[in-house]
Length: 535
Image (cartoon, rainbow, N blue to C red; front, side, top):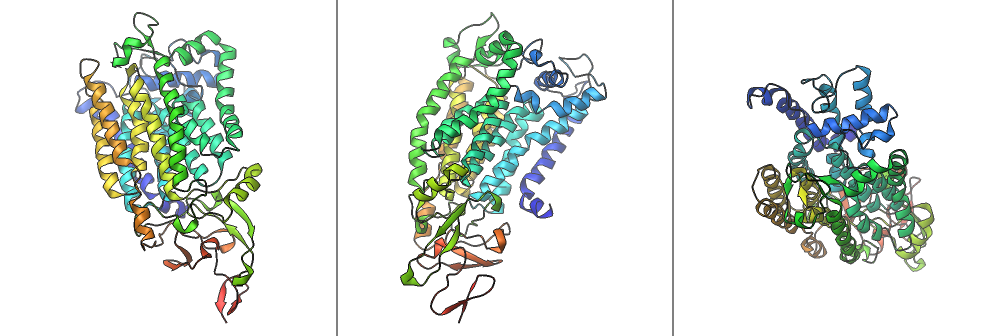
């Protein structure tokens, strides 16, 4: 546990800061600085909490009716069910507009719980950054910028379901990068069951799962949302269909965009957000083709030789696997007899590939394994996922300020491999987070600033090939404190060397990137531990 805490020091620290500032703003700032008479409690959170209370009471048919205003999938209520159960147990009333009691004790349960589950996205981003070989300094900067952006979603607007869904999506990308497509599919499905915005990333993750596995991947990803939504439809078809499919939004309360001219009017006060979001889904499907080609060009499918696979974190970056349990085992591969090498079981990492990737992929497909991705491929997929989620902001008929957060958070993650990209991306993300709550009259001004700034952020975060050229020209990698030993004491291989001990990286000779320990042959003897020692 202590070792895990050291590795995740950045998100742990930022989570504590977000928790403390959320309490300070809600309980103190709102009273003494804004001179209000009640605590600051987001009304949207109480509406979703009402749906969670009804779920705890078995009233599944009431999730989408009578004041919840829920437009997400039922998973949004499921993730709040533990807090709702505790609130019901102490008979604390919900806050306004659900209840008439202000400063309710229920808020002292709801606030820390929602902040805690929402900060899971910081841990998911840190895990992916570690897999991409990013050092601690950049990861700390990413967590800090991510915490600032996150603050707008939960303490201010009260939508933890967006954070949990994006966290599950990032964990799914991490599982795919580790060579676990089936695990990735289930995680995406759980994210969809919480918040359907994850749907925009589904085409990209499906195509990079492998052409032979795409049908099975999509089938697994569809199970959790189908079960959750099917149960709600079976108990109350009309209310569930209206909220989930038509998705009413309020242009007189939130921010209308130029697309409102094409949005169907449901009532005199609401328009349908569903058609505009369908355009974003179609474009996300189109984007999966260039995303797949970009992923393939950097060796995501194993087409790039191991010697050409380089870290994207720059010269001297650490190549560490996020979790040795997530690395796909590979079959024993015979070494050429002319070199005097023994046949050894290979163990692939995020920066290493098998000598025969197509055969290895096909052999493991039935077990839910695939080839791990090199760091450059992981960064490429992260960037395209950010692009897909940004499409939502381009075609919404009515925007709310927190809609921009998923694209900002994942865009900054894509930029974390270089200070030259991370600094401008983080500056744009934080600036946009601050600007999005400024009210501008008219449909064009506010929306135009949002779209242009998101485009600039994604441009700044675009993965570069400069580090690949630098490493091929002679750059080396060094170890980091997060480097872990593999199974049975086998050191974790790096992109350009093999770890023999803490802080010790030896350059690999030709053919040795495929071996997790020094080869035996003429002039060497094998110790009982399996290492090669000079004769």
